[in-house]
Length: 449
Image (tube, rainbow, N blue to C red; front, side):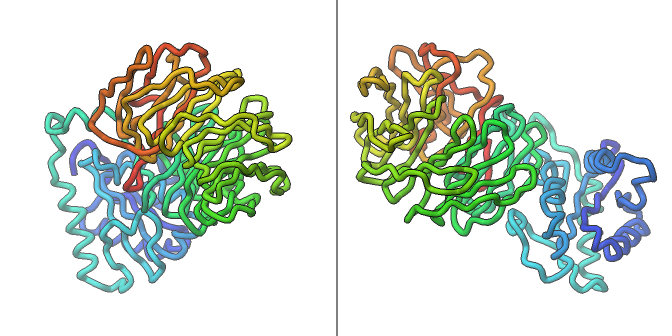
C-alpha cells in the first residue's frame, strides 16, 4: 500500500448487515489487507462522523456493501461516502460495489460493475475482491502533468443522478444546492464537500425545475408528472403535492416570503399556489403555447412568464390579469428574471438572444446577440462584486459583452434555453459568467459542474 493511504479498504455498510461484513473484513485482514471497519476503528468516546470522514480520507478503496437495508434509511449517508471514490479525477482511488442480496441496484450505482456476494461462500467472488484490492495497492499514482488543464479548471460534482440533470439551485447562503433530474429525483448537496445530503423521492417522472425558499428550509420541484411538490429540506419529506396542471410543470418559483409559489406548464398556464395549504389560488391564462419559465418580483405583487409562444408576460399576482405582453423574441423564451427593484426584466430565448425589458412600458431596451443556448438551468450565488447580466452558456463557457455586442469565449458548446439573472447591482455594464465559484450548472449524463 502506498504511503499516502493508511488503509487499503473502507467497508461501507448498513448496521443491519454487520455480521456479513465482519466476516468479509476478517477474511481480507487475514490476507494482509489493511481494512477500515467501524467496529475496529471507532472507540468509545470517539466522534463517529469525524472518525468515518478520517477513515474515508485515509482509504484507497471503498467497498460499498449493497443490500435492501443499505438502500433504505441509510442510503443518503452511505451514498455520500462514495463521492471522492467515484470522482474521475481521483485516479488513485477505487470504488467497488458489493451486492449482498437481490435488492434492485439503486440510483447511480447501476452504471458500475459489481461483485456478486449473494453466495457468501463463493471463492470466485472473494478472489475478485481480494485481487482488486491488492492490485490497487500497487497501482502507481497518476502523474499530475498527464492531466489536462481543463481537468484542473473546474470542480466537477458528479451528482449521482442516473439521467440528465434538468435544473439546479443554490440556497441563499450558497452552502447547499438542489438538483432535479430525469431520474425522477431531487437531490440536496453540500456545495463545499460535494456530498449528497438527501435524495428526495416521490415524483413519477422527470424533475424539470427546483427552487429553494429564501430561508433554505423548504424546496419546490416541478415535474413531467404534472405536479408541484413542496419538500422539507432537512428531512427530505414531501410536505405537499400540488395538483392542477394538466401537463408537464416546466418551472417553479417561491415568493420572497415563502408563502406562495408560481408554476409554469406545458398546459399553457401559470398557477399561483398557497404553499401552506397546497391550494391553487389562481390560474393565469393568456399564453398560446407552453410556459417555460416563471419568476416573482421581490415584493411578490407581480410575476413574469416566458413561453414557447415567443412572448414574455407580466402578471398582476393578486388579480391574475396580464399587465403587459413583451414581444420581440422569434423563438421560445426559456428563462425570465426580475431586477431587484422590479423595474427591469431579462429574458433568454432559443432565438439566441437575451433581451432587457422596461417592465413599466414593456419596451425592449437592449438585445444581446451571439448566444447559442440549450436547455440548461443555472443558479448563481455571491457574485463578489460582479455586476450586470448573468448568461450561462453551459459547460464552462465565459461570455462577456459591452454595449449589447456579445462575444463567446467558450468550448464551442451550443446549449438551448439560456437561463438569465440579475446581480444585486443595477449596473448593466456587461455580462460576466464566473468559471467556478458561485455557479452550478446542470448538464446531461447526471452531472453538474
